[in-house]
Image 1 (spheres, rainbow, N blue to C red):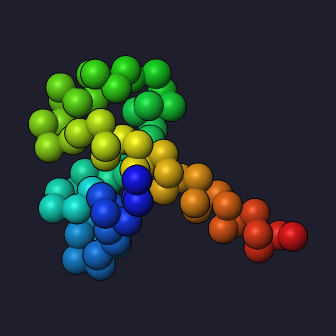
Image 2 (spheres, rainbow, N blue to C red):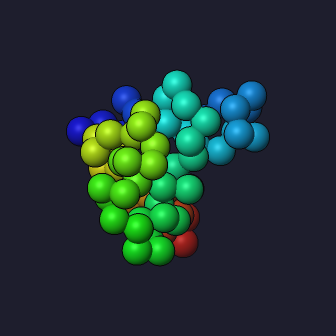
Length: 74
């Protein structure tokens, strides 16, 4: 899976925060909900445009961002 197929950053959508393509749903929101203990099934029910692939893409995106930050410090 390639997270770039599911996530984009556009200055005119949600102040440039990463969102799922074609939506205003931020990656930050989904990751925060998951981290707070909201089950994937509940997220999918609450956001009809969201798919399991979007959730996996969000996790891959987060890992990529963390990896980029770590490389700045080494």
